[in-house]
Image 1 (cartoon, rainbow, N blue to C red):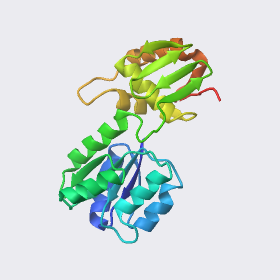
Image 2 (cartoon, helix red, strand yellow):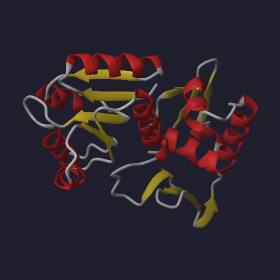
Image 3 (cartoon, helix red, strand yellow):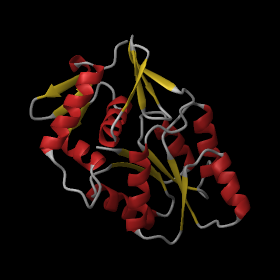
Image 4 (cartoon, one colour):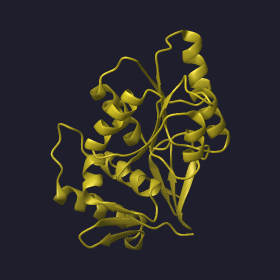
Length: 223
């Protein structure tokens, strides 16, 4: 289940967004002021940050700027009624990945959240992530380096590996994998998933992707 931090000081809008996203299967931690958001931000890891800009305490711009300085990598969307180019520039300089202007449709918000979650690693300064002593993942070009040889990944295998690596050591339920890998107009397939798992295991080793009976899969990188 993807986890979202929502900062929105309008109680009605906060409740509406929270209920909508929870119905879509997300876990939402909702707060109403910047100080509370700051506290929650460092208590847990989030998949997406939804931040109102004009909030009591710390505003959304300053909150995110500080978070980026402290290596918070989760993608962030500013929810705002501000529409000047200067505000837009300030927002992106503070480290946001997207904007959504009030008023907006909940469907549009959902699409933006889904897009960010599926896109991959954000604000990661490293070009390469280690999987084991002889295997590394190249973030920008979605390639594996296996004992010095470059191996290209298929689209679904690449998405699946990103999901595993972002949630190392956690059991990822089958349902979450289906939602992550397949778009709205695609039919999830257990057979196809098993094929993607099999392909990845051939490349990185069976011991890296552990099947948890009736629950899902767990990815384990070599320390």
